[in-house]
Length: 113
Length: 113
Image 1 (cartoon, rainbow over the protein chains, first blue to last red):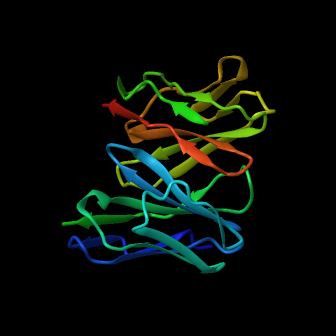
Image 2 (cartoon, rainbow over the protein chains, first blue to last red):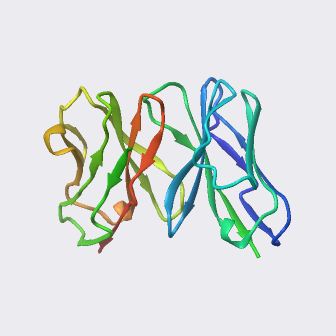
Image 3 (tube, each protein chain N blue to C red):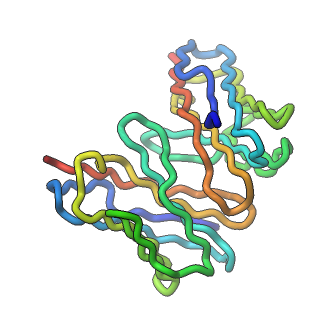
């Protein structure tokens, strides 16, 4: 089975532009997570979904960030407008149930100039 | 609030040495889960082990072993006879039943030949 798929793998954009990151979870996994990794702040949970419903978005840094999960096989994380401090690696992860390991995608390295 | 502390920022050992990575956690929940993940230089996050709060049995998997002690809120990870391929950043993580994952800051392990 394919693992978690993320696209694009690398994104370079200019400040003020809209950025959309995409994730396809592992089929059958009911939970989907978005994380951000930076040197300064480490791995931060931004938001997670259960059965396509956002459960906890307390980690979303500000209103410029939004996430959606229109169906069980697709999620997006959007930043509008982007800022240089948004530069990070964004990981998507999925898991089949509560309390079990998460399977991570390869990450999207975002650079905002 | 949940918190994970990995006091060792970086560790360097020579190949074949044993090394222990420390993890101390804080939670008010009685049901929780502990994890270790490995992030090699290639950047992906690889799941290593999961423990629930009711299972204090230590575990050994090849050269890896884990020591879970609720009395000291610790979940330490030991690599026996380290190898160069073990060089990576290792993350300890804590999740409550609500799936709020908190990752520690990570310990960067360098195994020198």
